[in-house]
Image 1: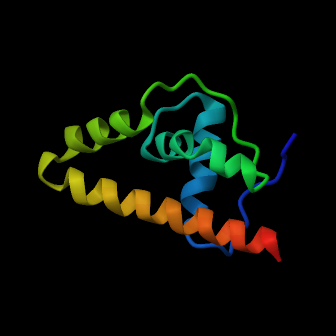
Image 2: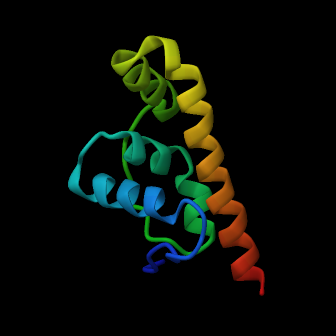
Length: 97
């Protein structure tokens, strides 16, 4: 069972760490929905992402962002997903070394 926490020097590690912590605490946040979206990929790099029953986390994230500011939801969503992808790529690269 993976037990590692996100490597702090990777881009977006703060976002992923908060997301995993929020999932553990049962909090729905931007970060927890991102972690739920990428749970399988994050587990593959050895992170301890809790199993959740969050259905359609990508839709829920967009709805959360739109509720805060409908006009910036799309760009904010893309920025968050981009940060998550950057973290995952860096973690995969670090693990391969």
